[in-house]
Image (cartoon, rainbow, N blue to C red; front, top):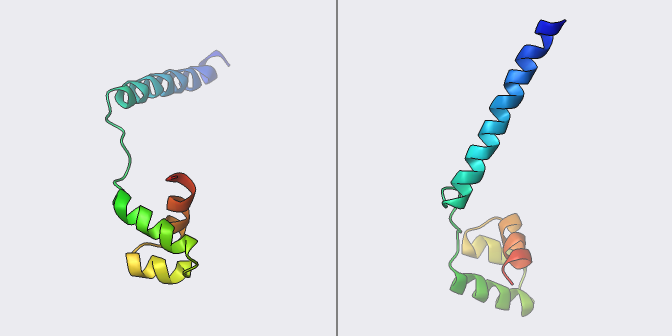
Length: 78
């Protein structure tokens, strides 16, 4: 039974080293995420038009983004 734990222990060590490496990469800016589809000016325009009452589906189509992306912009970029 002693040998059954060895692969699990090795895997735990590998995962810990991987987590440390990812944390270091994030600190030096290697993990930036995906570039936004719209500039901040276009997002501001989008927000104004939503507040003016325009249909979100129509706006998403016009701006070339999905409705979900539109909703994310409205939620996060305030």
